[in-house]
Length: 418
Image 1: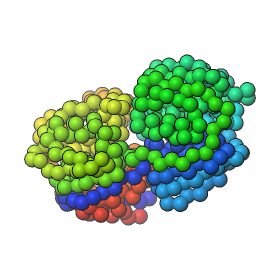
Image 2: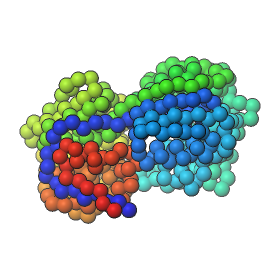
Image 3: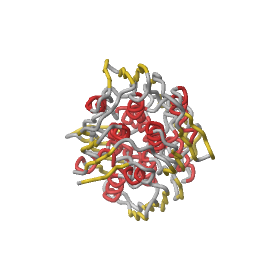
């Protein structure tokens, strides 16, 4: 099991590139199941979750060629409309194949995703939406089975709670449903818009992606397309925080600054100097002492829950008391205990974390508990005195492409060891 060994105290200076968004890549890969034609997807990050999704799609019947960041898929026939537990137990986004499989093949059998370190991610929104579209849902032996032998039909679907993967799943299913589907209280995340843009290229008729109401006019079939996915706003945000924490002058290239508005607004309030040299670059420079600023996670365009752990790390280096409130997941503070091992002054109170800074962090042996928690530990290690050893970095490999190589290139003393 790989580990990261990090020597802290080095400012990050230079240019660090942003990869394609993992949270866009997963749904667009699933969307390729909606057509028998060839779909070419570009800027696909080479991370663990993507490799798992590719293996799943091959089992389902896709012919796939991976050439660097370009993935070419063709699924002439759905051979096995199933996502088995043994393959998808490490990747909860496997539920994204439910909608495309039911829409194209008339049935799907997908393993329930099981437990998750950061809290429940129920797929009841996916299931109730598919039922509204006419699918018959049953559950047996840990699997969800959905059947629509006569095809799906358009419906009016109102989500009780905003759900990103639920919106994506129902959006994909609706493209091949008969008649009109209206999705209300839809997620507005950039990744949903990116998926919608691909579906339109494939021949789908829809409008409203990026708003709370999406309308879809079903078509009888979709065709192939060529699509480049958007930049990963969570990776870019992680690097923005890394540059600020270490006091370097770091340029994050290939990103979409407007997708990071909630983060950069908070960091600017805290005293950061963040500029935009061009339309795809953010520059972070030191600007005196950081101030503690409260933050609450929200659905987009609010502050992303996937950046909460990283924000907590930087608040340990800000003067004063800050309160971080997690509203999306009920158990997303497991990194707090590991940060405390490094010297952070953090107190948990339900869904609130109270951070007293500035803390002098020191290197320690810590364990990554989930994808974003592991990123917060890397950030803390970059400013800690001495050596930090982070165990279970397979978590960070799920969503960050060669993070140790990218950070090393801008001055970080980080090594991956077996």
